[in-house]
Amino acid sequence: MADNTHTSTTNDTAPTATLTLANGAQQAAAAFEQGAITAQLTAAQEQAAAQAARDAKAAKRAADAKAAAARKAAWRAKERAAAAKAAAAKAAAAQAATPATPVAAKVSTAAPAATTAAATPTATPTVAAASSSKADQLIAFLKAQIGKPYVYGATGPSSYDCSGLTQAAFASIGITIPRTSEEQSTFGTPVSLSALQPGDLIFWGGEGSAYHVGVFIGNGQYLDAANPSSPVGIKNLVDYEPDWAVRAI
Image (tube, rainbow, N blue to C red; front, side, top):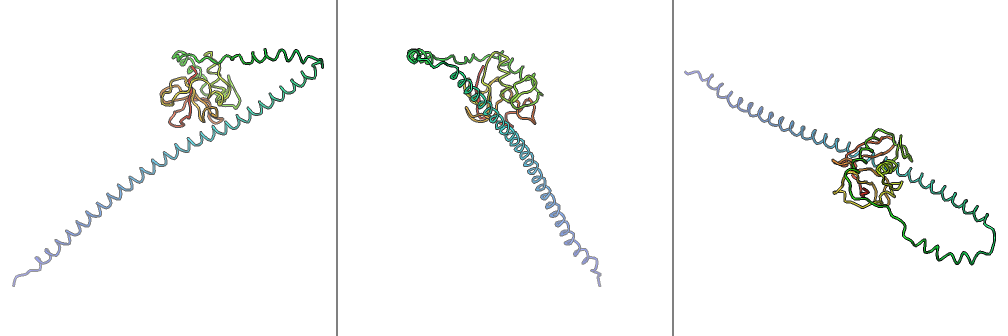
């Protein structure tokens, strides 16, 4: 009788080996797929973390600028109140010193002349045509202030607040602009944020209600005195986009 033991064993082993190889291939494919999913999740998490960091940085800058604006508004209100009090005291002193004589007719006669004088148009600031040389001079002055500290209410030369810096910069090229960011936002000619030119004033907050100001210096950058934790320096517009702009050169 023929011995079939060897043949039977070989036939049983072949399907088992095939199944083992198939299972190994499936496991390898599953491991590869899991690795790809893990890599995608890791990349997405890293991107989300980076975006969150950028958003947090922008939010902090906005909060710092608003806090600085609030302090500035309080300081300006205090300054205006002191000025009003001084003016009232001066007027009261002048009235007390005026002798009580019948001069009503003379005052009445002079009134029309005074009215005419009051109606005379006052001189308005002249906004010069755009000048690259003046813009270059303005930006050169601003860059010379880089690194100087932010101090609320300061107008230079050793420290500045945001509008104190811009006022000093424009004064350096012979242009007088108002003191506060609110007032500066109504000075000059409004321009689109998509058509900014070096030397344009840019604002956060609307026209007449701006709480922060800087100067566009080209190449998607601006220079400002931001807050006590950030000295005079250059920033990127994409990190903290303004709301309003005017051209004063």
